Length: 65
Image (cartoon, rainbow, N blue to C red; front, side, top):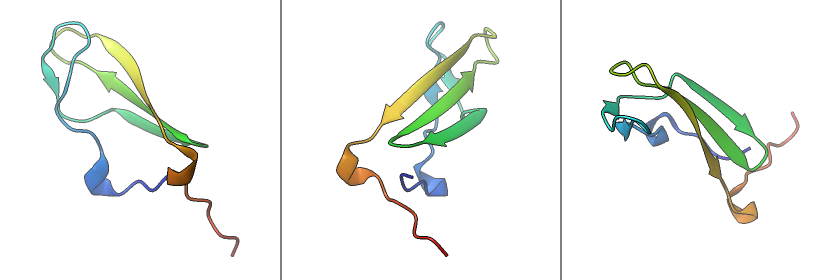
């Protein structure tokens, strides 16, 4: 799983339809080597997903307890 610090969440992403800034994603889902963000624009009610794909050397494998 990639490191996801609370300070690294994307902020003020522009809406893909109207361009108005969206303060933060509604949903964040982590997968192996990627993070998906669900954005919802309150200005025009447009919803879209953005996906961050990480290089293999950026992926951190959690240790077993």
